[in-house]
Image 1 (cartoon, each protein chain N blue to C red):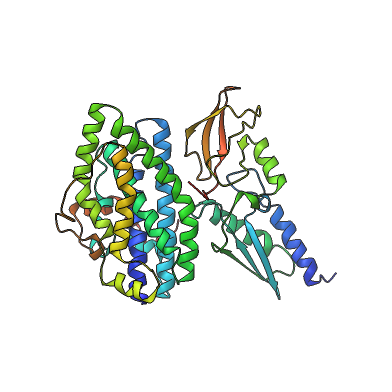
Image 2 (image 1 turned 135 degrees about the vertical axis):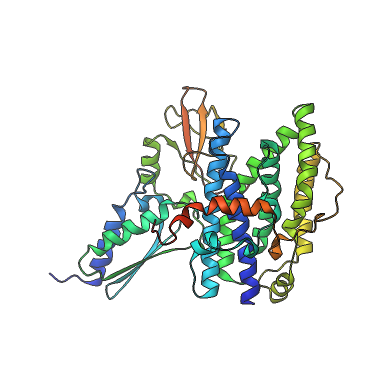
Length: 162
Length: 252
């Protein structure tokens, strides 16, 4: 069966939705990392917006994208570009992305500010205190929940204000 | 213009790489686990930023290899400030240096975000939002150690006196700056950058009971921005490049 260009683009998005961030159990599309996709005569350009510009996962994600898309019939060439002209913000994350990260034990903020109370992903309390601005990856900080006594990780967005 | 822009980008790249390497030396040696993780994370981020700036240098050059720029140059080709190549000394000194550098970096990124060279302006806009965490961390430690006890205050004042002359090197300019300011590529002079930086650090230092020492700028006459460095850089590069020198053709 011949696929029309529209079909191919939809297949590409479907493939992208199945690629997970190597450091978090969430699809790159739900994190809001994919900015756009351009397809022209079998040549595909995927443009990404990184959460953190120095995130070492970006290279792995780029490799995954190339491998997955090249496996699609009708794709001859894949380029992945990381862009910075539009900032990544938590608003880029989908509700499904927030749900997956919360289920994984991360507190996910609504905005890129420091003032927002940190909600415990386990018990929902905001009786939380900062333990460390820095965590196991660039995008995570460590908190402690005084209500349920669990250490928690907070998804740490780049700061719009400080 | 290309040469002046290249010069500016190398400074930023080298600053980030070298201070990132120094921060990484705290991995496993921080005073507590949180600090250890923090310095390791900041190191990872600074070295990642260095890579992005080296890539931009290659883009300006039209060719080149970011890894070669990082690991394959002799000391005289590095353009970072002498401040960042100094050994870590104690925790207080290291964090004071981090604080002084991050304030400068913030002022520099403010300017870069207005660059007429679009790739730089875009990148600087992103880095600015990320680097704020480093600054928060550095400021918190300077405030804490400056005012905690008599001993910590004394040690921080001594540390400030020791690093201040080197810190002046951060805001040293070269002929490249005039060219960049004139063209609008980077719309700020070294004097204005120095003012913005000094005003930024002075507030926190005063509140931390750490008066700014009266030291002549760049007392030792060192000019990192012109490729003049200390033996500390030789030692740092010797270690940093040791693995690469074992097999320069290796693929990672």
